[in-house]
Structure formats: structure tokens, C-alpha cells
Length: 110
Image 1 (cartoon, helix red, strand yellow):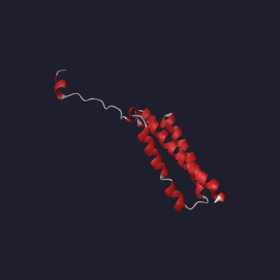
Image 2 (tube, rainbow, N blue to C red):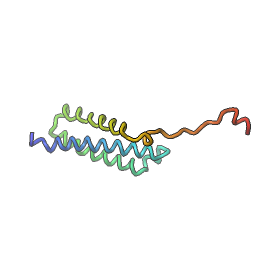
Image 3 (spheres, rainbow, N blue to C red):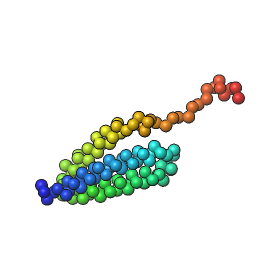
């Protein structure tokens, strides 16, 4: 087991960097109005870079950890992201207000 410890550490690092990537992408999505602007947002770019780092750690991990063990371990990231998402303040989770449509009666007064 000690010989595999660096690979299990890489797996854990890959999972944690994947979680950070998810959170950064979410922040980038919330900060921007349009899809094009979202891809240029610093948090989105940082989220993609963090995912790339996670992938590198995961590749290192699966070099010596069986995929049948490594792949299910990544599902821990879904649980961690869900817990973090639930723990975020309500104001941060509130969806953007939609524009109000005027009623037909209001439009006829124009």
C-alpha cells in the first residue's frame, strides 16, 4: 500500500481540484449575463484550468490504481459539490430575476 500512496494522493487531489473547478464554473455562470460573456469571465477560465489540473492528477492516479476503483471514487466529487451548493447562502443561490412582462391592460394605456 505505501507504494501506491502517491497514486491515491493524486486521486484525492484530482477529486478536490474537480470540485473546485465545478464551483468556479458556477461562480462564472452566475456573474455573467450571456453565454459568450461567460466564456470570457475570469472565474470560468480559472474553472477550466482547474479541471485541466484535475485531469492531470486523475491520469497519474489511474496509472497504477485499477479503473474499477478509481472511477467510482470520483463520484465523491458529486457529493462534495452538492453539500457545498446546499451550504451556500440563499442570496448566492437565488436565480436572477426575470424581466416583468407588462399586462395587456397596461400596454393599451400607451
